[in-house]
Image: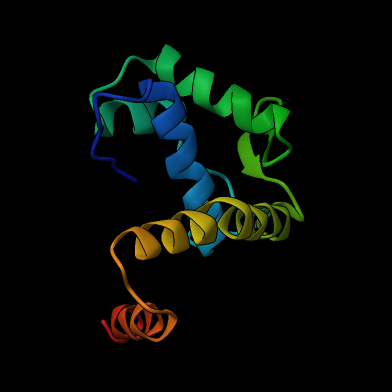
Length: 122
């Protein structure tokens, strides 16, 4: 579980997003333990506190749960909740941004859909 960091977003938020994406994609299954804080921090050359901050956010969001003395696990129902939230974000942010940009570029609805279809083929 490694990440390519950008310089615009705090690292702990990027780590949280990486774990969120792994849960949403099914790479981390519900009930499964995530890699240890030590493993994530050493694999990505991070301070363990940075990883702890990321996991704390995800525990507050009910994506992860801490089991005392055992580790941190993906909560039951987390994947469906994340997918539902991502779909809402896609519909309320990404699609409007795409259509706004397409209009700005003078693309028709058909041309925009053709571009989207092309990307799905990749």
